[in-house]
Image (cartoon, rainbow, N blue to C red; front, side, top):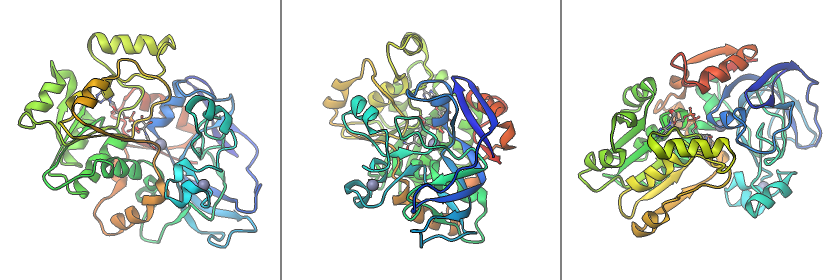
Length: 390
Ligand SMILES: NC(=O)c1ccc[n+]([C@@H]2O[C@H](COP(=O)([O-])OP(=O)(O)OC[C@H]3O[C@@H](n4cnc5c(N)ncnc54)[C@H](O)[C@@H]3O)[C@@H](O)[C@H]2O)c1
Ligand SMILES: [Zn+2]
Ligand SMILES: [Zn+2]
């Protein structure tokens, strides 16, 4: 089959590789009908997530048709059209039974690496390095899906692939980020980053009852989408001398009740701190660029919540711990527990409350994937979300 593989930073190619086969009785094989490139893939593309090996198949946002079914699977049959959550969950461990699916204790065979880095290991993820299990990803013609009695969601007729695909990651991720804000009526939420995760965080914040959402980015078409699709008020941070003051001014001096970091470890900065973070990350002195994170902690109002869907991998400098403490902030973060949200969010789509396909800007063949990684990374051609057909 054809699959998009990582070889080294900025070097990905579409290659012929052996088809995946059933390995365990709870496996299924899915023939991929649609797959997307995620902002998280850029962290791999740019070489900031450790433990990638040359030849690893990328991709954790994918859906398709079940074509082979392991002996133990009774919940799926050949021909079912499914979305597959990016986080792999066994369904029976302490974490899975407490709906903390992305923290599954059994799905990561490479636990040792993560335990050394983080104390404990998260669960396995598709196409996301050997810290997260080294599973082959879904930017391919076929994928092996382990524990397939737990996660895949059968998509009913009447919902298109493009509408369903983002149930695998970015829609639940934006939703969990908003849910983590514990939104009360009249709350104001500020969302840093207007990529796909930011767009779904904005829309989800309104679904959960926020009265105002303020969205921050610097890319004009992403800010435009936040306004037009998400009905957010927007601020281009590069036009502000002081983004924290601008957010304060926009909220009667009180600041937002919650702030969402939909930027993550590759934030762009302005000024001295931005340049310093970039230099330190390139020199591997600092693993992540917390340029947006610092600002949004500063911008968050007293007693507020900082919700962090943006991915961080290691250690950050100049964390404003004093500000977080003095203002009594609550922090919530982590990989999304997709399985916890997918049915509810499918219902939102069926009820016409949201159409996730509206964020798609590029529809290409898998063979165009390597070019699209570059275009998406460089935010060329008004690119916000790429979907690929194998
Ligand atoms: N927690 C999870 O389970 C999960 C799932 C999916 C994605 N993510 C993470 O969420 C983050 C966003 O993903 P995405 O797909 O939307 O990626 P993306 O790269 O398309 O979006 C990031 C956005 O942040 C903006 N940005 C950069 N610096 C900024 C700054 N200083 N202030 C404000 N905005 C700034 C960029 O212009 C861009 O629009 C990534 O870190 C990704 O890894 C996490
Ligand atoms: Zn993702
Ligand atoms: Zn588990």
